[in-house]
Image (cartoon, rainbow, N blue to C red; front, side, top):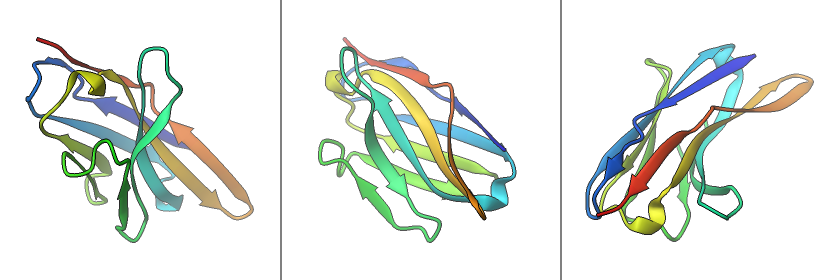
Length: 119
């Protein structure tokens, strides 16, 4: 079992920066890939950035060059650094983890944190 807890969401102006954090706890040794998803108003949840257990990252085209995902295994925390925020980045951001403990393969989600970009 894994627990994920996001924090850091806020109301910011366009062009601002913000860092989201996701603290994870429980059977963390069996967490493999992790990622940040977002759900914009009226849209489906979408992958923003992902990071593998080996540290490889991938990003949605809309955030490349502006968002950076990182993972601190010593602190059991996943981060999403966001710069040059745009109004279209407004969404609820969710932390996600893949969990594999043979033969179980599961996925876990945090409760979400709201990011609003508005002047």
